[in-house]
Length: 433
Ligand code: SAJ
Image 1: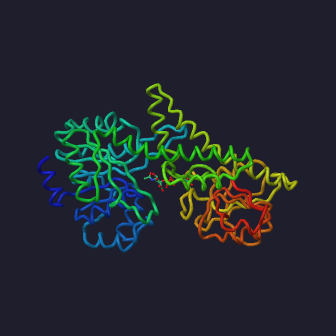
Image 2: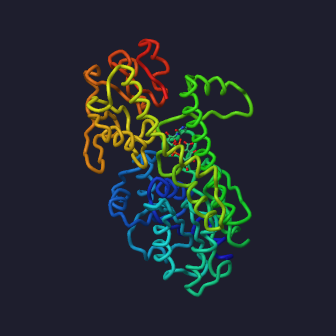
Image 3: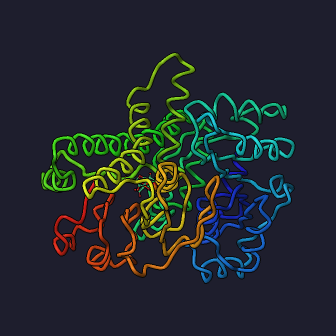
């Protein structure tokens, strides 16, 4: 342990980061910036090639930043698992999705454990960053690593430290976002705090790996449940004939005790729709039903159908049916100004409209093509907006001229309040969620 601490404090410790995606690559650059030699380990040869060619594939990491660390010799990349045996510190930043039955899929973490276990060396520190259920590190990861015959807290050290990367956030990046960390034993914690203390602006120790796992799940469950709440408020406001966004914006003037969330077409991304279900799944194994999480998931998953109901009702008011209607979906990525389509509710909105016989196309400046189960669509240019029976704003990209949309379109269903500044130019033409 003392040798590990000495190498960490002198920045001579060698670090390996398993998984160099939107979490791992920024982490690699911060570790290199702190003066450590760091190797990005990934099975995706394209990522390895990107790092070696100093061509960043992560928007938050400019090519110049990547190049500076590669040219200094501090940052390398490899798909050879032997780098894991050489490393003093190994950080695991791999995906933890849900499988088809919405149960946790920890297979990527276990694949990393299979790469590490046969190469586990005395004195190594392993930090898991991938979001998982409370108890995973203690019940699954550590026992797997101990099968090597080495003893946790004596021969090797394990911590859990949740990733808090918010892609595209100009203010908070890896280094200046407080870093929560929990150690399996006090020595594990000492090693983890020492390592991240050399890289991050602020380290937040908690009492265990389970606690650190739970911190992450609370953070993202908080968002999913509050988004579910405002989505239900939108459903209720619709029945009351009230404008949801007006209600929320007025409530948001309360300077204390309130935090605005806004309704939308559903929950997209790889965090918010997924992480809370890791917690509810774990509670099910303990015969407890995490009702808020389940209810939020039901409401959020049901929003695409609510959007299609709003389209149906708006067309109906114009004596038109959805069947045969020409509908343009405006914006399809899971949130504004990004190209990420993971779990995007736009996919469900399009599918539901097509099932009801609408002729659907989409426009998204960030998404050139779209793969649906039975269709492949291409983003159409924003010309001749009056040719559509309805334009449905599903993602509110800033690149779109919403003034032109409300002036030229015949009917606009706005699920994001994108037309807030311009809808007065076309009274009665814009229906908001
Ligand atoms: N959404 C709403 N209404 C809201 C806020 C979000 O419908 O009021 C929708 C978004 O459109 C999107 C989904 O929820 O489809 C998730 O949005 P998000 O703003 O939470 O963005 P994400 O998925 O990029 O979440 C990430 C998370 N970061 C990590 O897990 C490390 C989350 O913890 C961050 O709080 C969030 O970014 C953020 O604050 O931007």
